[in-house]
Amino acid sequence: MSKKTKEHSNWKHQLHEIIYEADTRAGKLFDIVLLITILVSILAVMLESVDKIDAEYHVLLNTIEWIITVFFTIEYIARVVSIKKPKEYIFSFYGVIDFLSTIPKYLSFFLIGSHALVALRALRLLRVFRILKLVQFLGASNNLLKALRASRNKITVFLFAVVVLCIILGTIMYLIEGSNDSGFTSIPRSVYWAIVTLTTVGYGDIAPVSGFGQFIASIVMILGYGIIAIPTGIISAEYVTLDRKKQIDTNTKSCTTCASENHQDTAEFCFNCGEKFND
Image 1 (cartoon, rainbow, N blue to C red):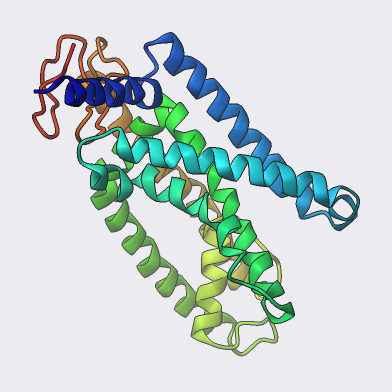
Image 2: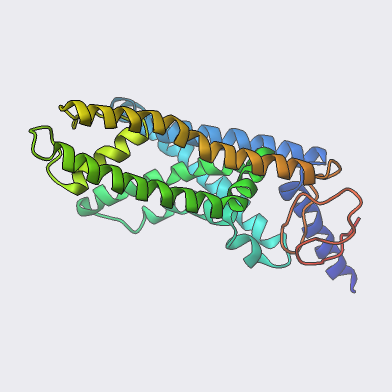
């Protein structure tokens, strides 16, 4: 390896440590700056939606937005060039979010004219995706995603059972209340009532008037409390399982090839792509 190539490799390695890892002082400082920038960006987007504030401070908010957009652009490019397989980052969850949070301001150049103002206003709201960048700062969020993935089959079966139950309850209520002037004019509308009641939302736009209908409604309300607790229990059980499997000696070491994180302190190779770490 030539001296020039080695210097280039070291430069990329140092950049990777700053951006992807938080064990170093520079990495921690970068994360703090990025976190503050995201919060300022979200605040600017929220204030910009208030017409009175936007009319008075539009220039200031627009300037802040441009500064933040340039910063995120540099960050995005740096993340791409600092790993050996850029596609691993570009098409990852965080990569997509970073891209969506950066492009709206640039796309405003192509939406010129009064007919595009409505679309531009909606497009600018895409910047709120930056709040999802905060997820990468919350270690527990990864456990939540893993728990949701592990319990997706159970949750799917549960939701299917709830849909079937709502159809049955809606049909029963239609048979009981259909002849009364209570709003149960069709089975779909009755199923809608069952969903609203079972989830304990209770809009009150449809309500049974007969004694038997109110009795059935009471049962549905009680069932709702139990049904709400089931998904929580399923996900909580997966959390417990993950905690048992979790290694306490993991750190923020990130692979320079595929950007995978949460490796063990003693790891010499990436668990995802097998790349050897350069300690």
